[in-house]
Image (cartoon, rainbow, N blue to C red; front, side, top):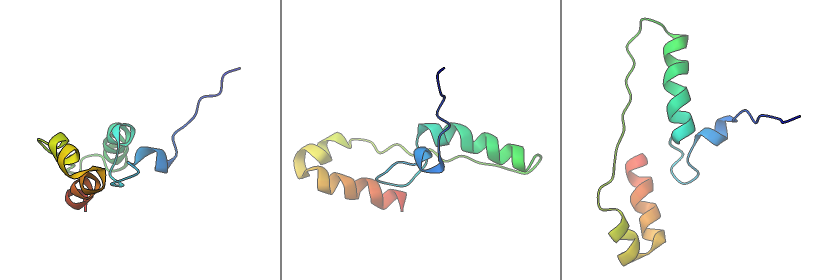
Length: 72
């Protein structure tokens, strides 16, 4: 028998930013729409361009801050 792991709420969030990850981003809109049919719902997706050079030039600690701040 194979057990299927149902994601916990923590599995739906990025460890560093606490924003929804891919799993959460797929499930949360569907759950929100299902819980409040007929009410407006929006999704915001942000892409940070040219992020790799930040990590390469200043290191991962600074890169982590560069990810956390927009998330905050």
